[in-house]
Length: 250
Image 1 (cartoon, rainbow, N blue to C red):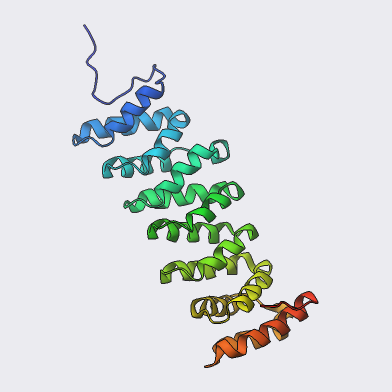
Image 2: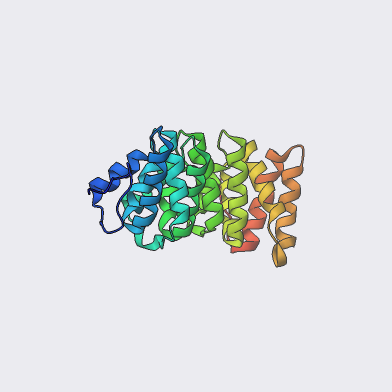
């Protein structure tokens, strides 16, 4: 007697190819809960071979597909260092703008796990017109804490969205001492930028000044002054001279 096949399910003895995996991913969007469930289990069983297509599915137009793909990727024990190629990272960056919260969180967590390999694409994502993508990119860069992201996070201190500006400052705090001089140099160039000054103030409140306290405290105080745009340039010049041995001209 011929064994009845369950819709959306891959037999354990078969090794699905890319086309069959693609079909299973499509089944994640089925209105039939049984089909979705079988596709979910099959893709979880497939494991690593399905990772790239599941990453792409995080930005699928179908909400069910996005949600199920995120859940499956959470279930699979993936060594993402093996998948840090341009195509997969591009799919994950795209998913940062998804309307599905789980898809966004999964994509961000994966990008953070890729560490340095993901920094440049995340910096580019900070320039996106999509607010969700910029927010997630700023959050991810802060969690990675790589000094290579310093200049991009400083630019993001002037983002139109308050939450992005806040996360950019938090990201600079995570980077720490290596962000101090670049941020002070930015203040010299744009002392009239209210958002930049607010971000610098947030940063200087958040870091451990340590031995640099005597140098940086006057800068923080100048940023709090009612005429900060007038006080900041001179104070920052003085701080830069003390920190680097040379002044910076605006």
